Length: 351
Ligand SMILES: Nc1ncnc2c1ncn2[C@@H]1O[C@H](COP(=O)(O)OP(=O)(O)O)[C@@H](O)[C@H]1O
Ligand code: SF4
Ligand SMILES: [Mg+2]
Image (cartoon, rainbow, N blue to C red; front, side, top):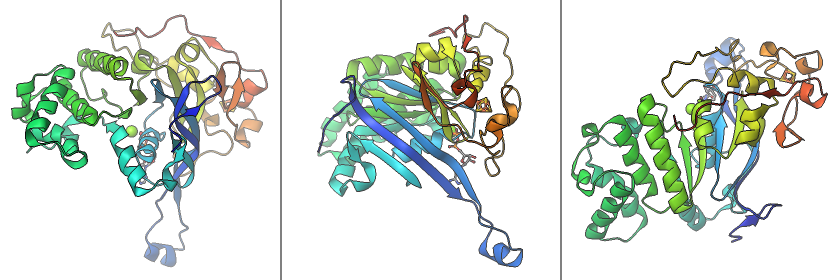
């Protein structure tokens, strides 16, 4: 197996996603289709997403609810098959992996979900929850598992004796720490985090994010970090991809994106950064609504909400092109008629 694929700047590419698409068949029943002559309906949840993730980095995917972030996560973890495109993990295509390779890959790739309570079995003690992957994937004895679980609990800021307690005996932040401990059990390299702090109180969010950053440094983890919250993304990401209706519309290094967003949608989102510091900074609402994904607008799907939309935008889908340090999909940027917006006021990191 080709262990590492080198990118042009010699950084190791862990994951390469090319033109990934996932459509859902949401057609009416066959009976309705025959009687009322209703057509088949496909919902394009993800429709042509490409990105790479380097070893040790955090790539964030950000966008409003329903834009396809969780579907991308599920494609990466093999929970959904691809409708189109390819996903390579260290140069090996997911769909062409042998069963042995898939088994090995499942150990190296873990996922953390938004709601820790829903993902932790309430009837199991914490020790059993965290030991489950050890039981499935290793030949550790019960005593070795207990020791490893204790280590993991301490690594996430809990105590070894917490393994005797049940999930409901912990706070939301502690439960997310338990989920992180379980995800770390098999020494993974890559963790897909789907809104890991969105269900937590603002004051607890920063603590869990800081823990995740510390673990990344200690263990050399790579994260795909999914969030609808730009302030959270600013705190954790090295690079940021902005999604809109199943596509990435802009992707750049964090400072580039937060400092000089090019895409009108990114600029709109940046105007609406929620304040996670709790200091009560005013929020500017995002204008307009995300269109119905079953009936997306022709051309650039952002055109009904875009102040720069013209006739070309209403017929032609823009492709993601390199513009300086940013990749952006926008006709106005390509034509040089979009102003880059500098954001002097950035969201406070770690607040
Ligand atoms: N299993 C499914 N069947 C049908 N539609 C789905 C399914 N999963 C997600 N969708 C739809 O796909 C779109 C993207 O959903 P999702 O990936 O959950 O977005 P996000 O995580 O960004 O909120 C939404 O319109 C959602 O309703
Ligand atoms: S392509 Fe057109 S509609 Fe889409 S974001 Fe750019 S200017 Fe706006
Ligand atoms: Mg989601």
